[in-house]
Image (cartoon, rainbow, N blue to C red; front, side, top):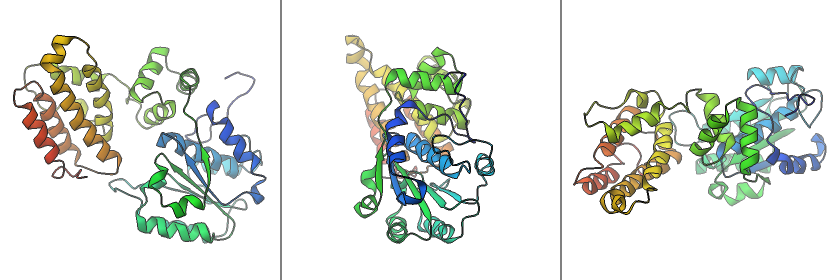
Length: 343
């Protein structure tokens, strides 16, 4: 990122990654704002990446300077956007503690779209992870997609577009984001975060090579990539004394805990020593299966109690070396419903 081309960062948004260029070009090629379609579906392998893209589009549309290539960052529209109080923008996402985007949220959004724009010509609705809408919510949104109210723009994001009803998908123009190449991912994350190369590499490893997910997690929790959790995981193997659930586990959300635990388990599973495979390989694979199943259900919207989940996962991990671990792991999978993560 050269000093000659300063990047405006509206609100919580970073600079647009280079691999967004083709999709942004398709967006620009669709014509001036007044002639553009009213509904777009942005699809990526990572939810955070698709969310970022639609937020970037919204920032460009709400800039009163009319420069679609980048928001000015100083006009009234950009200032309102930065402060999260723009009257022509609504962002819908799954509410905390909920498993899905409900119909009442969509009805509220419909009422919002029916109002007169306050700043410019268009009301803008962002639906982040639109695939989390309930069937009733999706049907309610379908009515708006078919008969939009006034001059509005709907931007939907998804990393699992196949979960959306075909009727919703067919009424949106689709923009697909490519996966970032390793070099581009490393460069972008380093520029946006200011981290050292070691910190960038670690963050990318922990997010399966996705820099936007790494940036998103770090922006929400600056300690997300600290080593406290990894140290607590290692202590499971090397500390024979039972000290209870580690303090580091109680300082993070359940999804973050499991998301960080999985790669650590995978690293243990990758040991190639034949003696290790004969003696411990099966138990590590069983542990990975249990934690991966739990993580998958949480990603689908399950909201288990954090304290109970941490205690159960800790007990599962501590039991891995015991002779009866196969029974423990089986009981853990059976009891997922009791933990609030039934499939």
